[in-house]
Length: 372
Ligand SMILES: *Cc1c(COP(=O)(O)O)cnc(C)c1O
Image (cartoon, rainbow, N blue to C red):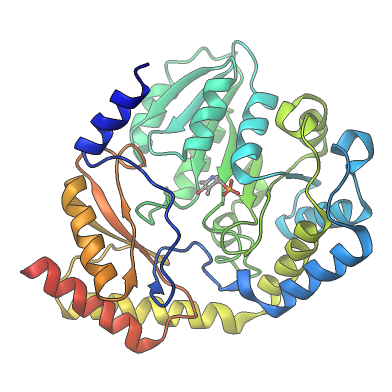
């Protein structure tokens, strides 16, 4: 049995991971609930209503009897919202990406993926039979160079996170879609950390950069800014039907429970209309960024609710995280392999629920720890 030794080695390198219950009474800066919707009364009520009407479980997979009117309504709304012909809901964002990539990529296809894409996109590519080529993070010259080496006749897909959740950065979308068009490549953009947050109706960065019609598939999750659970993808009828017929993660799993779909419906409605939540979020982001700048702490140039503070060494990152905990803040250290070796970091995420004094207190504490 080598498992115990492997765990010991991880512990020694300070890379062992544990499931810890966050201490109550601390201010949470490590949540992906960017709009605070996970505790919103409107979402709770929608979930309760759906549960009361339809019960706790969907009782079967989507292709048997698990397709409710509620989930088809949600899919129609997702498609309308994203300006696509169709949409499909998955049991999580992770499972959705595996299912999508396994379902659309065939032997002989080439898939080009940003080197820092989310694990679910990487795993989906590996699960497929396509040839996987990874290009340097956000490096579109490298992408183009690698595309130019693929056979002209091969079906090609280019895949990226819309907003990279460990840095808060994004590709140059206009250039990215232009390159894809030049090589007649299909595209998948994963809006996990951007849906609900960007664009006129909060559909995501594809909406903000007005590239939705040029992108083949837009994927997302209900589990972050939308405050619930489950994944989805929006695209053409042909591709959605292909997934319904070929995506094993979609076919062979029980449909999401009614309460989960109910809260997703409410969230989708709310983020399109409730501008106050967004204003509160961006106001808090600005307050925190300004506090960091005043204290001479490094601030990323990207306007995002995710603010990484790169520490480098995994052990050091854990120590800073622990000191912040003692000061009353939950700021988890993010270590390899989630981020590249030598770039362990604190990942601070801001929400509308943070009070101004909490934001400045975190910045001050961070400054005193790091400048010491
Ligand atoms: C979080 C995340 C996922 C997974 O979504 P879940 O609904 O949490 O499973 C997929 N893609 C990206 C880019 C993510 O950040």
